Length: 129
Length: 365
Image (tube, chains in turn green, cyan):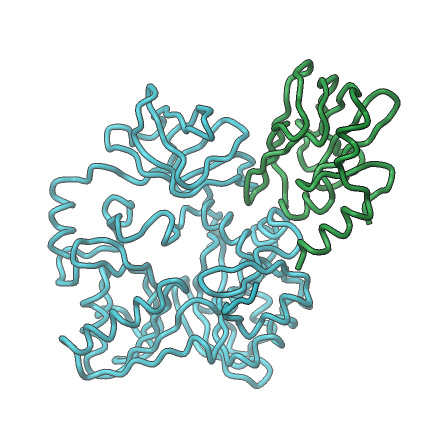
């Protein structure tokens, strides 16, 4: 079960509003599909991301995967811990393995298009088969 | 997906153990159970199991069997002693590599040929062709589907197999083979593998496979998938047919000259003699890359922004904790320590030509 305190993209990213920031990461399903993650490439602090634009790359032993920003916003922090220890994304994708924090902008429209945790659970249920 | 994929006799065992199945060479095979890196590490430090039942296993028997084997193989088979095995290439007339194989001599005129899963049909057609054209007095018996083959690899492989098998497989030397009994079932084993570690490949009746697998797991061996197998073979610089070698490459440029005996007659020999005299335009080299992005198959190798080659295999090496790759480069750039770039999705990464293999186990004897 994915945490219900945030919303999800169909590309398997999550976005969680905390105060006036949005924390972004990849889902547990995504990290399982990728397998052992060895490299995380994240954007510069200060860059502006549109919703669904490329946020970075996550590379596992098996493959490299583009990460898309589930919502638009300006990058205010990148998680240095996952750059230094990419395996954090495998170990705790919904927590300490977060990727970036964005400045919250235009909360309604971007978030409305994302999936709730129930909808996302259903999506991965179908993808797994 | 309605699939027409084959399953090995170990399919249910993989599912029970949490294997994630992927299509590979027409089979549903486990790519990993839990973690490719943990599985790779288990093989280097303890022991791991691989289902390699998808690989082709073909008996060639009869008065013409030695002549046929020597005709289609680049390596010498006729002087192989009974109970020994040899790695070899099978080439076409142009010297292109149809497959790489291990041939076990079982008797004066009986061999077991082990070939790659994806090439099994091609190899069978190749055998049939040369049987009908040149070597009629033999029989070909493909036992792939009625048997399983389990690769038992790593430092614990020999002691654990010795516990199960009274014939003590550990008395074999590398590339030796023998027969024994495990739990009353007959098994054939060779001291061979594709990981760079000591180990065995064990062939037995298909229905006995799951019980042996579970027994080995109970003894502490880790179930390992194709992902770990690829990591380990790349560290050991063992070529993968379909990636590093194929019909468009020949054994000379692939650095496999020592498995090619140019003083005997075989399919492709003339072309390979010529290549050997003139030298090849390109060579397969090992590369250590400095960036954190992983070089992968088909990435271009560059020097001053000019393309001089292409990566054929690349990956993260857990044993070396850095990224490694194999690739063909133009012969002017093949010296060890040569600096090159790899174009990884538009970004140039520094790399240096390295000695192969990347990893070689320390031999105790």
